[in-house]
Length: 243
Ligand SMILES: [Zn+2]
Image (cartoon, rainbow, N blue to C red; front, side, top):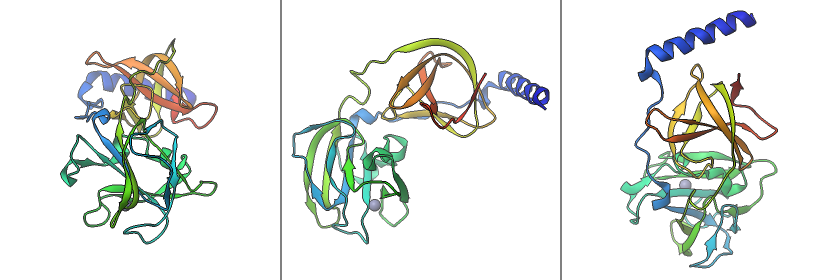
């Protein structure tokens, strides 16, 4: 069985080499560093306009203020400086939305699930706190009450990956994802997703980085850009296997 599997992967590797267009292509990734993140329906806010927050800074307490039917956190991402709905993008594709509730949260409404809804609604899972934390590093630009959003905090993203340093360790191997994994330009979930790898595909990596509780495999893309893929939680769940 093991031999057959090895043969299968060998065949897959040959097929991917023969048909490079099957490999993930870079999406037209927006730069999350130019955007704004809004967290809404909070019961209270503990930050002030102009305050610099880090990813994980407590912004306030979850609630059901404004146009809401129950306690949840509404997360929005707006590219650029406007607040036009046309500039809003699915925050899931740009920021680590789960950081808003310390990762112990599930999506109750994704992006366009209701008419005019342009965000992701998170509700806490067992063990999840009521604290709303910042999913990005940035400056608080609005902390106020509005009739539809209730109490909300709007943050201008600053330096999503800039300024951070990480230690890249040389190690060569091939990664076989067993689920869809995101490709990023920095080993952080705040770096925009630029492509994906799917189960059945693989790639060769030349180094790895430990950051944010994940182990990131790194390689140089066909376009010459260094990429990062989280292949496992440090000491925990694996999203595939390496050989
Ligand atoms: Zn919502």
